[in-house]
Length: 419
Ligand code: CTP
Image 1: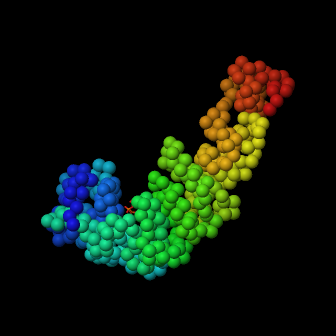
Image 2: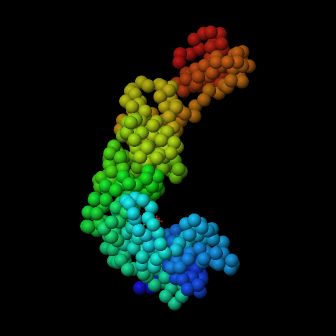
Image 3: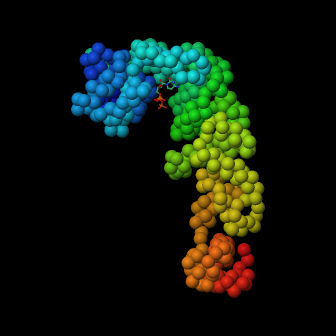
C-alpha cells in the first residue's frame, strides 16, 4: 500500500519536502528513513499530527549533522540520546536511530541496540502505533506494517505486540486507555486479559511517569471518559488504593472542560477534582506515589478543607463577610473545583459569588487616607480596614463618604458599625 497521497493531503508542502529530503539524505549514506508511530496511525485515520517521528535504519545523528549544513532547518542534536529535532512551521520532526530493546526488569528502562525498522516497530506499545511509511527513494510513501496495524485500525482494536508488553512497561496500560477512549476503540480480547494481569506491574512504574500519563489524559478533549475507564479497570486502585473516580467527578470534569480556563488552570482544577474524595492521609499517600509538585498539592489540600466547608456554606442567613471569611485563604483553583463539585446549590452559588464578585470587594479608603484622617500608624489601621471591608461586603456602607464617616466613628472609639 502506498500513502503518498495521504502525505500530500495532510502535510503542508514545506514539511513534506523536508521529509523527502531526509529520506534522500538517508539513502545517499546507505541508510533508510521512515515516518513511524502516531503520525502514521493518524494519517491512516484521516488526521494530521503535529509530532512527526522519523526512524533511521543507520545513524540518526549522522543524518542530522549533515542535514544541518545544507541549507535545511538546523537540527537540535540530543547527543546523549542519539536523537535530533527539526522544526518545520508548527510541525516538530524527531529523528531517532532504529533500535531493538530488551527489558531486564518490569518498569526499568530497556537496554537498547541498533536494529531494523521491523525490530523498532516490534518494541512499540500497540499494533496501531507500530506502522511506518518509507521516505525518499523510489519506495517513498510505502506502508510498512509487519504486525497487522492497519487491520486493527480498521476494526478499531488495540492489540499489544507481545505477551510481556504490559509487564515490560505498565504505562502502556494508561496509554492504551487513552487511545481506547480517544479513538472510540476497544482492547482486543487477549490484550484486555493481559492488561488485567499487567495491573500488578503498575507498582513498578515511577511516580513521575505515572503522573505524566495522567497529565496526558487531562490534556485530552474528554479526559472524564479515560479516568472513568481507569477506575473501572482497576488502574486507579493499582496506582493508589484510595484513588477513585465517581459520577460527581465525571460531571465536574465535563463542566470544567466547558469553562474557558487556561490550560494550566484547567489542569490544576482537574487534579483537585481527582483528589476531591481524599482525606489528609490519603492525599499525602497519593502525593508521594505520584510525586505531585507543590503547585498541585497546595490546591488539593485546600480542596480537602473546602469539602468540610460545604455544610457551613449551605446555611441560610450567611452574610457575604462570613463567606469571605471561610474562603479567603483558599486557592482559586480549589474554589473552582468546589464550585464544580458541591452538591448543595446554595453552597455552590456562594462559591460562585465569591469567585466572581466578593473576592474583589475592597474598601475605597486605604491606609494612607486613614492616616490623613488621624489614625496612628500600626495595627489600628489594619483592623479599621478589615472592619471597613466587612461593612462594604455586607452593604452597610456603600460609598466613600459613608466609609469616611465610619472610619471617624472607629477613630472616636465608637462602635463604627457592627462587624
Ligand atoms: N511508544 C511506545 N511505548 C511507550 C511510549 C511510546 O511504544 N510507552 C511508541 C508508540 O509507538 C508511539 C510512539 O512511541 O506511537 C511515540 O510516542 P508518543 O509521542 O507518546 O505517542 P503518539 O502515538 O504520537 O501519541 P499521541 O497521539 O497521544 O501524541
